[in-house]
Image 1: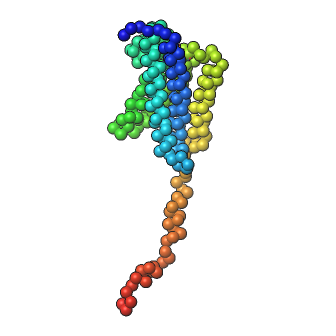
Image 2: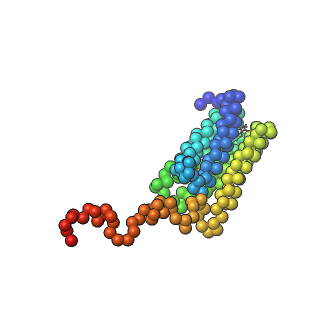
Length: 221
Ligand code: HEM
């Protein structure tokens, strides 16, 4: 492959990196909402989970674009191996490695989610918890290596992403502080469901029903 280094590649790496960070933020917030069973009113719960799943796949596409343009751009000297194995890059090894670790974790989370039916729930869950590592590592990667972090807009954008995830997490633990129990926003199980109440009010009184009585053939004892 011919070595390419152009400002278009550089701008694409930067733009796709920023979009990846925004999508990663949305994935984190969506994941926290899914874990806390948000929805069930106007927006059904399965829709929240489905949006989370789709955004995470779109995020992976942008991260792969970000990595691909980095590899193709000969200026930064990052090969496909260094994009996947941490600390093997000749260009800014530690700063690139942070991006690599974040990507490897996201890859593991995505793959295990795609084969969720074939693995144990505890394994899937344990690997999914790695998202709480992937997000801050990606943010540190961006802060340390990004060209745009010297601009106020990028600092504000980064602060916005971190705050969004921080607030979602705070809400998760503040709204459902059930020590030792499952973190869930499902309404208390002690409250009777509305449907069962409706059935109770419609239940016939003791004794033979009117319908059964009226259907009895005349002249029989
Ligand atoms: C979850 C994974 C990743 C995310 C969310 C991410 C995000 C970002 C962001 C937001 C920037 C800053 C862009 C800017 O300042 O305009 C950036 C820069 C960069 N990333 Fe990543 N990155 C990830 C993984 C990787 C990987 C695996 C590599 C290595 C192949 C990589 C290579 C780079 C490079 C070389 C830059 C510097 C671009 C520049 O010159 O500004 N990133 N990344």
